[in-house]
Image (cartoon, rainbow, N blue to C red; front, top):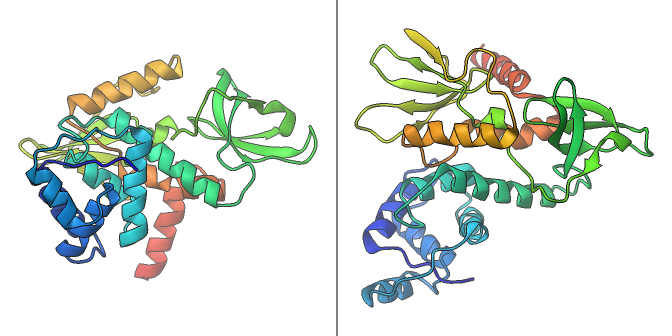
Length: 292
């Protein structure tokens, strides 16, 4: 793996951020793991390279995914938390962007699905959706024969179909559906903070003036005093590429550089074949059962 040597201050800030994650080990362990994940023999090797003022090549999306996966394997921390930590601290360079963070997270999901030993889960395809025509999708399962009962997930939900209706889509990679990350609107809290929410009304980001955007808990009930929509109550319409660009524009306007916690529901939704709203109700019932 190519070596990525971050600025000393950036390296320290990133290691400290990782050490504050749930179930993280001590700071020294996080420093050593981060150095090794970046392609160095150990922390001392990284410090020696930093001392020489060597400028390293910023890794591409695959390289960034490999660094995060290494940290996940060595430290046992959640991939989504690590991804957010490295992009928020700008570990990969002075500029962090939500489009790059989303691309890296999708590559990490690909690794997870490949290890799941399901022959069809997450495979990109095209399918005819009601009132939308041919849209991008991913297989959930594929029935036997051309008329076997099958299921696919699109940007807006899960569809039942037969296997012959799922057409190959070789130009596409695994993708996170729009409703897991594109802001649909925002609430205003009593303290003036804005909370960007998804099409399923799950909190995505809490935006407070003077503070970095915070990943919000998708299960949190927001007691807001105002509610606004970015594109009207009907949601975004038009080509998917246009919706993606508009969603990224909104995130950049609010200084967001990573992906929300709701994205971490994506694998479970696919594996259980339920959509975000159903997952939210299921999690709510489970929480009530634990509380009772």
